[in-house]
Image (cartoon, rainbow, N blue to C red; front, side, top):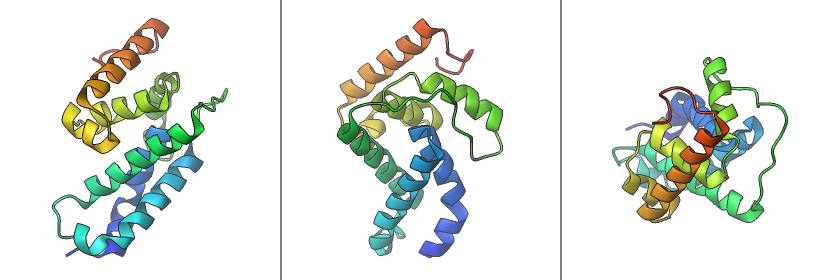
Length: 157
């Protein structure tokens, strides 16, 4: 069985990237990962026996992100793209340029659908919303990207 410290060492970089795509901010991503790992640590004994502890922590992160967004109810847009935290800096910068025009919920739906490759049912379960809401948020997000002409060719179909 994998111990908690081993899991954190092995997957923290990927979780930080995931947090960055969700939040658009390296600082918020780090906070999101830290809170999610703190919640995971308290239930590690139960989670480590499951098939997908990373999926569990990503669900925590997605729900926590939506919870933060609900409390804030507004976006904090900046003129600068946040600095990526992994090797694919150019690609992530382009993607974030597209995603920053969306609401937090729309961004979370697209990240879970296209970055995590989850089905609508799984996205709904992770975000605590209905499948119809997932579909409508994805549709609105894609329409926003198309109208603004920011969609990367072939990436958002």
